[in-house]
Image (cartoon, rainbow, N blue to C red; front, side):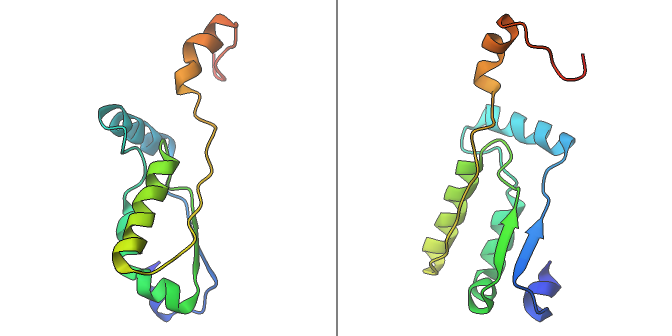
Length: 114
């Protein structure tokens, strides 16, 4: 990633931060602290390279939001504000059914691998 940002000719930098084990770790983090639950490595990366990303117009598309995409978005917005570098930051959310597990079980739904 970092070589591409500093020396590459790229328009988009894409990354896959989530695997099944990662999601389990993020769920545990979110359970302990509602502000967490996302891949914090993306925040570190943007913090380190925000000037180059902005200057080169590189768009970053990642699935780092994990169990808390809005928390990830907010953390990235804070990085931009601190650096005084405006950037558009979006988040896709709405697929977390954790709060509805009991309701879905009562409705007779089965888990995928049962």
